[in-house]
Length: 190
Image (cartoon, rainbow, N blue to C red; front, side):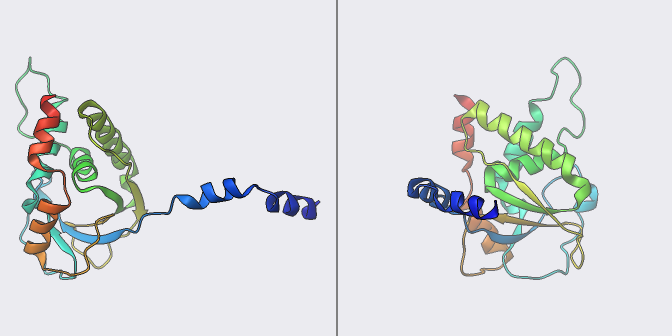
């Protein structure tokens, strides 16, 4: 019986075998982002951490993230009631990171699975509404050991061979590897 299964697997047509190997898995690069740009979490707005490593980013230096997070959050506002002091939620910021930066993997605690599911849903909805590219983000379980709370480990398809330091990495990423503010605004006005 096992011999028969093996022979059946071996007799798969070459075109099917080619299709299975034709779509390579993209190479991802790991980034360490200081999430100091989102005001919905006051505990994340402390002074810069003493944590230093290569390929660090500062969320505050990527203004497109704030723009998209606020646009996503604003979709839930009711205009017949006063605007709350804080309109964004954690899922809005994760949705913005998915859309703007093309984050494919977040290293998160397992307790954040529901939040990431919400973030993917919001990103998908916003992308469909405004005809923007969307690829669902995945989670890699992380215990946050050895790094500050305000540090988010992400993986993107963006490949950079040279680490330019926190500020230059952030500015380079914002200008060369993210959705631009003008393309975001143009998509929202269609």
